Amino acid sequence: MRFTVHFRGSQELSRKAKSGIIYLLFASTTLSMYVLMCPCIMHPELRALGITRESDIHAYQRAIERCRTFGIEIVSLPCPETLFLGKDREPGTFLDRLNTSEFALLLDRLEGEVREIIASRGPPLCCIGVNSSPTCGVDTTYYGADHSGPERRLGRGVFLERFPDIPAVDVLAFACYRVYLAAPLFSSAERRFNAWLSELLADHLFSVYLPQDAGEEGCCRTAEAQQAMFARHCEALSGSDVVVAVIDGADADSGTSWEMGYAFARGIPVISMRTDFRRAGAHEHVNLMLEQSSRVVRNEDELLEALKSPLLLKNQSLIYI
Picture 1: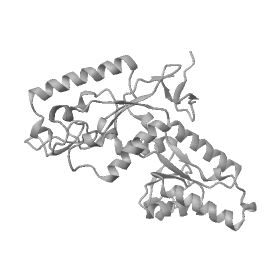
Picture 2: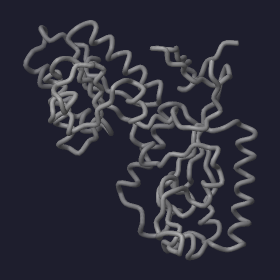
Picture 3: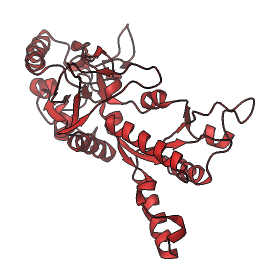
Picture 4: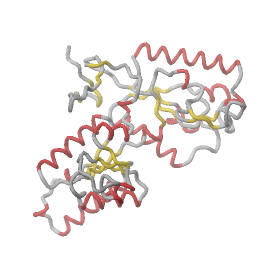
């Protein structure tokens, strides 16, 4: 049997073992990838009054955009709070208004409906929830204060916690998928490595801006072309969710260092990948200013973990090959 995976529409992607690492693949010739998404991400009016910020709306739109970009089907979860309390409701915790036998019965029914979807389609890539929600929180939830803990607690909301077998990710994390890949690009080896890393990130559902794809040779650029390229790169940097910087070598590439500093000044997270075993000193792997303004990882596996790749979420129906 040949194991392949269809991640982006009809485009077939395959993963090969590298550096002794066994990659995990679905045992299927073709899979229709889908996510279970909390409905308020698609319809923010379902949320409690006054809690949705403009930045939330932008993140919700990017999460949906990511799914569309990579051909991931969105299957909406039901909204227990709206079904039980109605729309245009004030914010509240689980203990405030939802801790009733009637609401528990509603959750039982809704869980059964979602389980039927999973049984017929197979496991989803993940659930996309909204942190702090009493029902659909992923990492935090407004449960309510009592003897066992504070009002806002770590853990899933009361609806998502019914699916411990399904990986879940907060919508704000899932929405961060636009990567600016900053790296030296002056030798064939550098450009090939950059292209390989860009393809790896795309395989993990990240949209990558790779400066070397500008396709212009430095010796042939006019002053106007250089200005246009600079503006194009700055625009891509400003529109990215995260910068991935390759900082191998005795000293980091000057252009890469500038791009890192630009991103840091604009509040854009920077993840630096340094596979080079040489150290800059006794206390740092690389230049102190670069190390302190970014998260340094040592290889592509640590990079994918730092980026919170959806394909690395635990508990998926995967097999070893």
